[in-house]
Amino acid sequence: MLARVYSCAVVGLEGVIVEVEVDTTSGFPGMDIVGLPDAAVRESSQRVQAAVKNAGLPYPRRPRGVRSG
Image (cartoon, rainbow, N blue to C red; front, side):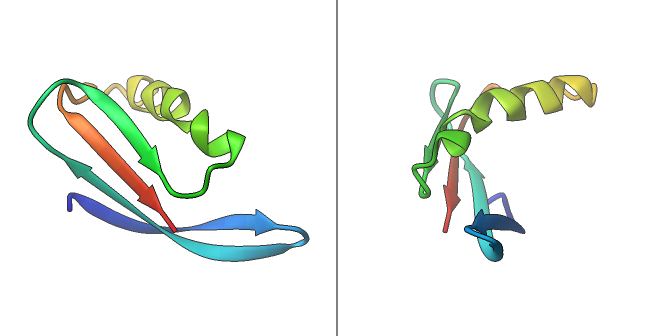
C-alpha cells in the first residue's frame, strides 16, 4: 500500500469517516476505484488527474488502485 488517508463522506445530514487506500503496481497506466459506487466517486479519477496536474506534479505512469470504505 502506498498511502492511507481518512476522509469524510456525507450520509444524509451526517458525516461518516471513511478510510481511503491507494496503491501502485507495475503494468499499464490506469486507475481502478472500488468501494462506494456513488457517481461522485466514479467521477473522482478526473478530479485526481486535474489536481495532480494543477499541483505541478508528474502524473504517475503506473496503474493505481483506490479503495474506500
